[in-house]
Amino acid sequence: MGKIVIVLSFMSLFLYAEALNTQDHSFKNTCLSCHEQQQIPSALMYKRYLMKYSTNKGMEEAMFSYMKDPKKEHSIMPAPFFLKFPMKENTDLDDDTLHKHIKTYLELFDIKKKLMLKE
Amino acid sequence: MLRSEKRSLFRFLILYLGSTFILFSIASWLYYISSKHHLLDQQRESIKYEAEHIKSQLRTLHKSNDAKLIYPNSKGTQSAIYDVDKAYIIGTFKTVQSLDINKYGNRLYHTVKMEPYYLGAAYLLVAKDINVVPIEGLQRNVFLFMLGAGLFFTMLGYFLGKLFVAPMRDAIEKMNHFIQDTTHELNTPISTILTNIEMIETFGKHEENSTELKRIEIASQTLSRIYDDLTYIKLNHKYHRQIVTINMSTLVEERIVYFSAMAEAKGLEVTVNIDPNVMLRIDKNDAIRLVDNLISNAIKYNKTKGLLDVRLTEDLFSVKDTGIGIRSEDLSTILQRFKRANKSEGGFGIGLDIVNQVVASYDFDLEMNSKEGEGTEVSVKWEK
Image (cartoon, rainbow over all chains, first blue to last red; front, side):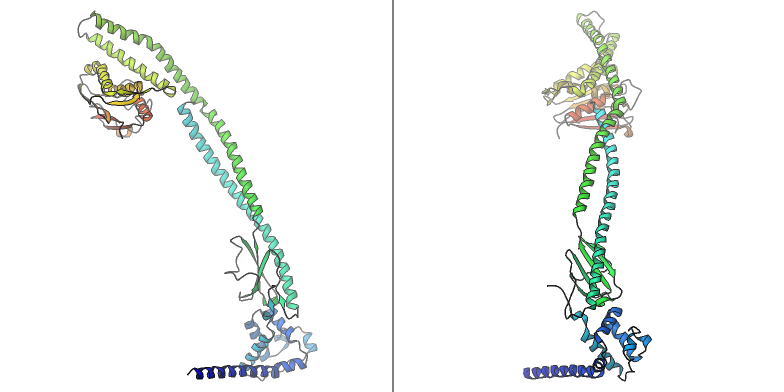
């Protein structure tokens, strides 16, 4: 019985890690590869969102709205930004996947992880 | 200083100093609160300055691309940042219950709204320990002021009080001089009359049971007693008592004999119950004044052919009469000097005041039961 529980636990852990890996992989392919290719400053964009919305929830909602309808007037980036970088095309991702990708993005650049007190 | 003068001065000082103290306490308290707020405001200003400094450091951190972002920490000041939902992000102190806080315990707090939200911080809460040194200095100054003002106003009050009671003192002194002069002038003729009556009675140059002579004797005794009472009152505040053991039974019997002519003249039925050899430690003059005044009052205010009951036991001395009695509303003030519940009889209203003084001096108990129109019973108890 004990062995079965241990085996099942390992299997669950493996499947969860695999799912995360798949999620990360999908995010990199779908979002980050394009950002890197076009040299879009992802960290800078994160800070700009953070400066305006303060919480992950607020940022997620704002990003989701923009992704669904990417227009200059929906973006928080300054006008000169679009002179240098192309306007994003409409996404073909479903809402659930889009939410997951945004969460991964926020997790990746989360500034709170860098914050620490002086020892 | 006279007793009444002391009492008046004491009452005046209590009233004057009490009201002054209340007034100054309120004024000092208001001054203290206002100054303390001013000092705290000054300290709060320094916290605001610190907050602006931390804000600028947060902005720098936000723009930094370093892998580690060290939260600003300045000596003596603590701070923390919160997101737009007021959730704690990071800080040099743990989270507090509310961001709407100004002061808690010995700390001052200042909350700054951040716009834009550098590092996601919508609120910056800065805290600093209150510097108690200037507040303690303020408390010391207020205390010294109250102490100085208290001393000054006590001296002023004493001076003013003496000034205010001066007319009363003059009036009392005049009255005392009058009593002194009167008693001095009365002494010689009273002694002469009493001595001559005694001589007439001794050498038999009179008719037996001469009514006229009895009247003269009673009148002379009354005058003599008034003289003794006035002398007692006059000397009371500087009278040196000689406390000795006195046989009260003998003394009361002697005083009843002394008053027998007066009681006889009024046709009183006198009943005497005296326990033998009742001993009491008391000044003899005090004992005579106590017994004389109670018996004399019982005779004077008794009705003609009434009853007079004199009782002496190991515990008490009591005199009961069937006289005019005292109204219940007068019972509380009847012991005061010059107070007379009934003005139909002669007298100065000093008898019960003397009784009260003697009772108070020896810590006896005075009990007075009276019913208007029926009579009065006065008891002095010395065994508690």
